[in-house]
Amino acid sequence: NAGVTQTPKFQVLKTGQSMTLQCAQDMNHEYMSWYRQDPGMGLRLIHYSVGAGITDQGEVPNGYNVSRSTTEDFPLRLLSAAPSQTSVYFCASGRTVNYGYTFGSGTRLTVV
Amino acid sequence: EDKVVQSPLSLVVHEGDTVTLNCSYEVTNFRSLLWYKQEKKAPTFLFMLTSSGIEKKSGRLSSILDKKELFSILNITATQTGDSAVYLCAVGGSQGNLIFGKGTKLSVKP
Image (cartoon, rainbow over all chains, first blue to last red; front, side, top):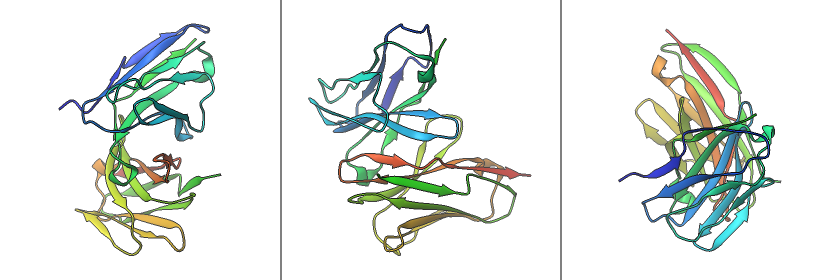
């Protein structure tokens, strides 16, 4: 049972490049979300999904795009990378908010 | 706007001390409050609280929720160096989101 799998673990991008951070879970969880974590800022919600075909914006959605075509996968797309998007990104999934969420191991992204 | 505030932001103690971490919240349609521990990697789940006044315990860690005063505390007794971590408080609302506080960085010195 792999839980929540994020790839890649590390990535360096040049300003203006685009890329997709992958997230997959094998627990049949309906809820999936993306957070970014910056020093002193805690975890901030980027986008979330309550089921396949349904996505919504979180606190800091600008510059990011998501889709949820299957229950298992929830990729995060950076459309045109900016240095302000340098951060650690976590994907999380769960049955409902009352059961807690399982986090992936994170992707450390640097934009130069 | 929903918010979760943790205090203190950082704390340094010696092994054997008891610590209390605080979490206050203002969240529309509160569903649950969760505590996570984060060492160098992803947050790991500690407790989930939904009812006031019922203490959750796991070894030397315990937590309680006060839904009237909108806060929770996390207690760690007889601290060990392995307790050094960032402790995150998160509150779940009706949308299914988790809103996180900025965390409390605990350092336990031998």
